[in-house]
Amino acid sequence: MAHAGIKTVILLSFVLAVGFLLIILSCALWANWLPLLVALTFVLAPLPNALSASCGGDEFSADYDGPGRSDIGRFITATIVVTGFAFPLVLAHSEVIRPGACVMSIAGGALVYGTILAYSATFKQEDSEFD
Amino acid sequence: MSLPRSNYDPRRVCLNPFPVLNIGKHRRTIGIYLAGGLFALANWTFLDAAILSAHAHPPYDEPQLPAPVHVGFTDWVPGICSLLGMLIINLIDKDRVRGEEGFGDSGAVWRARLILFIGFALMAGGLAGSVTVLVLKYVLEEYAEQYTYYGYANVSQNVALMLSTIVLWISQSVGSEYEYNLSI
Image (cartoon, rainbow over all chains, first blue to last red; front, top):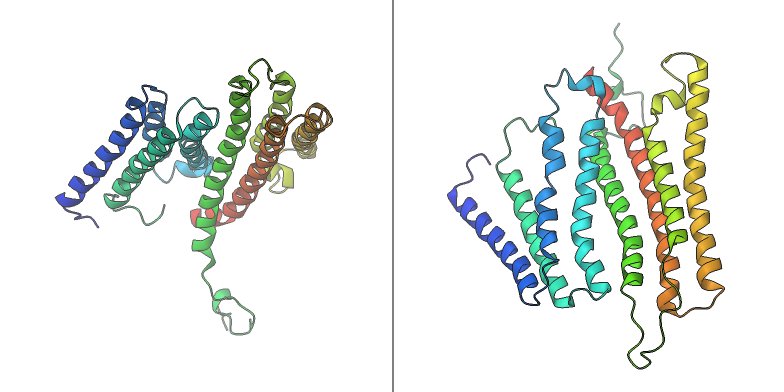
C-alpha cells in the first residue's frame, strides 16, 4: 500500500483531530485538566519502538547485541499504552475526575493511538519483510 | 547418495508441515507486548489502591467517621521486592544460566544461577509478603470491603508481576533460536 492516497491522510488527520477534541473536551467540560496527560501518554507511546528501530543501525551491527534492543522498545511501548488506558480509570475510581471524563478521554486516547498505528501501518517503508 | 533435506524427509510421518518460523517470530513479539502490558497493569492496580486510599473520604451519612486504614509503606514493600526480583531475573544472560556455549569458567555459571535464585526468591518473597499484608493488615482486622480491596490489589500486583516475568522469560527463550537461525 505504498500509494495510499491523499484521502487516507485527510481521514487520518480528521480522526486524530476528533481524538484530541474528545480529550480536551473531557478536560474542559469539568474544568479538571488532569486527563490531558492521556494525550501526552498516547503521543509518547510509539516513541520507544521508533527509537529502537532507528538506533538499530544496519543488520550487521545489530547481530552483536541480539534482539534485546527491540525487545525493550516493545516492552516500554506496551507499558505506556496500558498506562494510557489505566490512568483515567484510576482517576475516575478515586473520584478525581467524573466517569464521563474518563470515558471521553479513553475514547479520545484510543482514537489518537489508533491513528498513529494506522498511519505507520499504511505508510510503512518497503523494507518491512524482515521485521 | 544425498540425504533429503530434513523438512522434506518422507520418512518422517508425524511431521507437522505448518511453517514454524513465522509463528515463532510473532509469538516472541506478542509475548513481549503481553509482558509489558502485564507489568503496567500490575503497577496501576496497586497505584489505584494507593490513590484511592489517599482520596478516601468518610461516608456521606456519617461524616465524622474517618477511614480506619490507609495504604502505608508496608504495602509498598512487597511490590518493591517483586520489582527488584524482576529486574534481577531479566538482567541475567540466559545462555550463562544454561551453561552452554563455553562462556568463561564454570564459576560464572554457578554465580549466574545463584543470582537467578536470588531474583526468584525476591519475587516469591514479594508474593508471600503481599499475602501476609493482606491477611494481617486487612482480613484479620475485619475491615469493610472497600478497605480490604487495598490488600487484594497488592496481591494481584505481585501475581501480575510474576506472570509478566514468566511471559517475558518464555517469549525471549522461544525467539532466540529463530533469531539465531536467521542470522546464519
